[in-house]
Image (tube, rainbow, N blue to C red; front, side, top):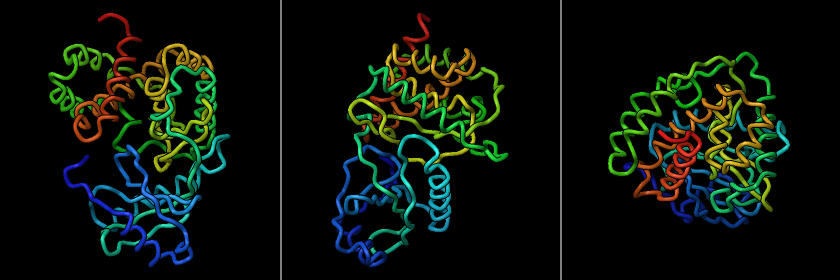
Length: 298
């Protein structure tokens, strides 16, 4: 999926686990055929998951990133009525893999990209409860300090221009450009709250049509309250989407900013993963289709 992507085999994972965590030598190691773009994931027994970053970089920087993710996961644990992964350990580089890696608890359930909850009003109610729980965690005076989604929409203009250029022939770029011009100008009024930051189908677990848990919680932190509303377009069709909005009592500005963050994310998915991760590319297209339908005729 990335030009410089690392590869890691189950045999290498087995060796790293046996060397660094001998208490797990008796547990089977199983690769997971996931559509994630950041980590390769392997199960260790029934209760643990090992995550190996896919893109190379300095080992010390990767370790700081993994430590920050573990701290975020530990802070979130027990703060929502839905299950979240909890940090267990950080592994070291070894033969066959050059970076630190992490171990966390394994959660049961099916990712929403494999069991689509989009037509479920009950799932929409669950999603509203999740977002409410996330927002209820104290920020302790922290504010958004990153460069990704969650701050100023206009700071993404250069990236969006790249996306528009790369999407010629794939999407209705002139219409999407006009839409971004409106969305990017939406004012920011609400204070930061705690957010998951990436509520896409691959990070949401479903069981019997209900929300069972959330994955990839390392980005949990303060951001625009509208950021987690990306889930409205990534996960829900029109009827359940309205149920989510009613539950959260979203005003027009907050709702439109949530649409803007979903739009920004979806534009990058379509072209970037067109060949290397078609499922992610299709997710971007579906989200854009929902946004366009929700916005009415141009």
